[in-house]
Amino acid sequence: MTRRRVWPVLLTALVLTVLSGLLLPGPASAEGISGESIVYENRVGDGDGTRTPDIISTSANNAVVVWREGLRPGNVDMGYVRYAYTTDGGATWSRPRMLAQETSDHAWHYVILYKAGSTLYAYLGRTPIADNEGDGKDGDASDGINHNGLPISGTVLKRSTDEGHSWQDAPLSLPARNNLVLSGRPLQRHNGDYVMPYWSSGRENGVLISEDLQNWRAMTGPIIAGASMTAGENHIAYSQTPANSSRPKDSLVMVARTAWDGAATSTSTDGGETWKPFTEDKALPNYNIARNYFTTDSSGQYLYIYNTGEGIHKRDILNYKTRRPGGDWSNAKFFANGGDPTIQPDGEGWDNYPMAHEYAPGKFWVVWEFDTTQIKTNKLDISDAP
Image (spheres, helix red, strand yellow):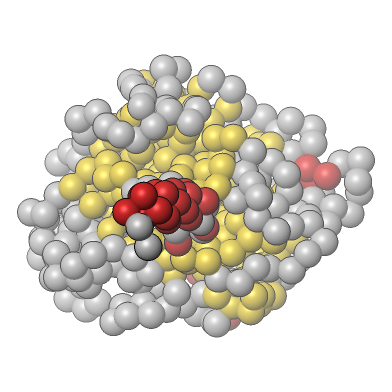
């Protein structure tokens, strides 16, 4: 081959190589994942730092993340609550700010976010600092200090009108329940009322109903008994099979974490006032290890983000599944698997406690905790899922 012919051949090969790299997506883009962003990192807390984050987005560029920060080594499921926000799509995050400080009397067990119009709401579960009934068992030390975030002594509401950059206290009224936990977002049903899932002592599952997101009442029907399945940490979504097509937002489905292989599911056709007993759905993997996330996107597609059950503590990988109306659940798709599993003694490489929020049709901001040291986010696009 002459030198004159060598250059065109090499140039053609180079162009084809570049085009192949551009046109053939890598594993991340094939799964609809855009790239992780670290909101916050704390490697000092001895594994008792960041926990159970949540996220609300107001656009593709704007989002706010909240999380629980541990108080001291040995305390779990309690702390103070901090938040950070981004205005550039997660490229940078604000310095962490305090949403709810611990006091000499109480700390915080959980926080759940919700967006209604231009107003953001944060529901925070409170737990006492002191524990005079400790028996030294199951981490409940007999030293007068609460070590496990129970009991939950009340719930506090905060509100933001500037995309989560600042927050103010708001009045809140809830029916009495022992150890009331709000673990899933509210939905708005056909008549405009809001429905929010809860679980409480005795593995009691149900929903609360409100006209204004501040004054809540119990559903009219009986609770959904979850003790036999140890069901809890429930989420609700709009059902893909509404009983009345003229009132589709009154057909709801609840998914809860259980000790069984499949998640517990229940349905309501009257806007959450009454619910059928729990049944097991083996298409939704469940290992009773951390809260899974379940929702319906704006096209009616289901999204389920869950731990795979692999690893020492079965929390180290997050996968997700989708299902279109009238279709079947997809195969498992990879979402997250963090790096070095020795970052924290009790983390073991965990990626768990996912929460998400749809910022555009089929497009979600997702937040989760990595290894008890980092709060991470990523964007997940399921808009073109089959």
